[in-house]
Length: 329
Length: 132
Image 1 (cartoon, one colour):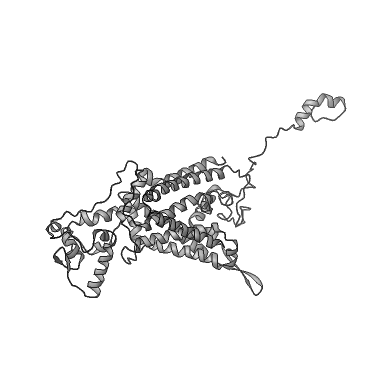
Image 2 (tube, rainbow over the protein chains, first blue to last red):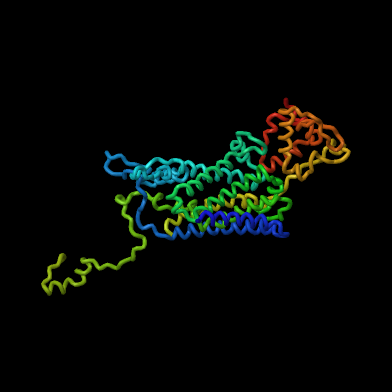
């Protein structure tokens, strides 16, 4: 089963990082070489992938129509489910990207007394949204390790995130939410037999990897602590392109960093590219104006035509001689 | 490329956001916060030591304070602590900050550097700050 393979890979990555840093000299490798390579692969990979998608022609409008198309004036047009103009498409995209509107329509399909029934299922939408928002806020929060002095809005996010003021260092809610929502998404894959049936290692791996990253971060913050000032001096060195060999930072930091590097390397080659892909989805980002505007197939060959008018011009005299009627004298 | 303008525009925005930490730090000094131990009280100590080792305190000082808070406030265990031959109260303001009387150069130096705003200071304060 895919989940065991994916789980083994995540565990192997953890063990590699944990064992690796005990070897003298390997701290530079795991702390500097691997992260730089990972960022490079991530940036180049994402750009090349999007450029490759950009070269695919979109010959015709193929939006998913989830409502009434613009029609006669007395028929109500469903603007954001069947957009007609670019403005409506932009609103549809904003709702899709920030609120996962299409996922909100998710249904639960079940057999009840031999009949197929469809029920509302908003938990997937809620967990998916929480997972993404939490991950995003966690990322923003991490900017405090990459900017000196730390901008006040990051301190504000940190204060809001930790407003429950539990423990020291204070508990940050998005970290917990990230693991909880990711855990639900994993649970759903395993628990729901239909979803389990279509789940591949490529579905389990990113989920397990992100949960692993979140857990290693939580362990590092609350349980096996590291010297955070040394960590920031090290990360600042990385981003100012003057890397210094990290010294006196615990192994848990290298595990965290190595799992993130693995995620960055894996990103451009995986389903995680939905980050860029959502903007390039022809079923979302096209207006349904097939009847209003003429769309010419972009790969049409420029056919040399010989129209009847030109034909007649060429053979008019011969046609007259042969007694064939002509349109123009 | 089809719709090349829009796609390239999107890619540029993506790169501008993702590489922000890099270009915003170009030419930066990448300095490291250095908490100062330079106070008259520390010089006056018979032996220069803290309640725990410096290595431990770097990572776990908040845990020590949290435990002290529970012991003093909840369990009433107010026995003195001995640091470098001096008897001190088990307290942030009267214990730790007896020696570390330089809050700005000691506490805030690292907290600010790491973007941490501990809620200790919602109630506690530095002798010099003159708040009450």
